Image (cartoon, rainbow, N blue to C red; front, side, top):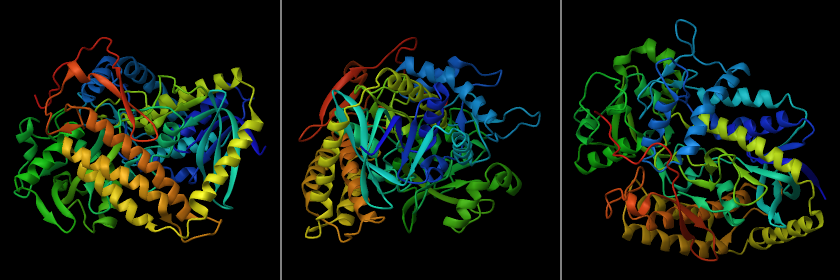
Length: 579
């Protein structure tokens, strides 16, 4: 027996830190631990720029936020979950302020808000354009004050341990030594973020490889709504670095090679003075990304060294406004594109940004596997449906991170027993598996870099902004071939100390699980909804597909099943913007 905790959290980003605080507050006697493959301050939450939505202004209402979120989701969100999210978000945001988050202020001293795409009212709190940075710092410094939290920095979880029908811990690789450890726990919370790295051009950090999704999937938990992959319309080539939606909220406009505001041609309204809520540049991300594809087909984009782009124009805002409200955007443009947005156009194109799907959970973060919980981007509650509205993800990780922490704490108090000898046997099996598959892989014939390139290109070509059956079937076939090829991967590094090649191989296997769930879920959904656009089924089909997709792991391709969407007060309606 090596280590034992009451609650173990996998992932040290925003959701994981909020969950840990919730456990510590629930009962200080509970022993909680955070396992993170990177130091928590390098978690991907730090990259969030624009802001976090929550109702605070007198001209706003909870119902308005709920309705915007449901419409943005193209009616695929569970409405009971959306109501929980919207009602609890303001309390979480105020709590964060009390812990020290420096929200930007209006001239009268109240919290400032800005508009975001698809929202009818400006309700997005922000800290300049470094909101995620400040939120992560606030959560981390708050978590540090709890002595009951144990930290495992730079440990990589390889497997969930399930005994007697419930999750009772994990095996984790200590990167500094290469040693595999058993960590037993009465409850486990997955907070590992997204999986954007299964695509070649993404805003996601290199660490976003779908680890938590794959861990749960292999343990028998379904992945929900994986076909819904969000492209953000303004990524910076060639890095994929995000130019935040806040740039459009402050008045930035998108123009094609002729200087024309092309969004007016795609049902997003007339090109009136900017910004106008739920119209033109303030439309939802899926619609703006789809418009880009049509501009490419019309030959109205600009051909650059890294492919076709359009331009984001901030020049009319003036240098003073950009320095005050968008300092990080300017910094990114200067360092990564060599241009000053106060005087030059920014080349942008759609980029994979967010996974609406994830580990199937309820509103408390509980998965169908007792003892296992999930929160943040790796989870699907679901409040994002077919398309997440910008600035909902940060409050989501607060609300459902706190809920998952509280629920896991209660579970751990009620389930004190652990089958330690059986867990130790599972850990030995996992150590032997890693040795057999990877540590003795010097004689393999496949190169990991090549397999990864094939994977990402396959996802871009077959499961991109627009899909069809032929492309999806081809993607599924290639992924099946990769599944076979990855058993023959060659690893050159036999060392145990910070063996990043071994970690990359483990991550690749997780990515392959997630990619297969995406491709097969997309092939089965014969309709177009939100970010899932089938050219062979161009219309939304509520009669057949007002349902969540559930992908279950098998020895072969995923098994696909469906579950009805929860509808409470808002029946399905046409999704209209630009009016």
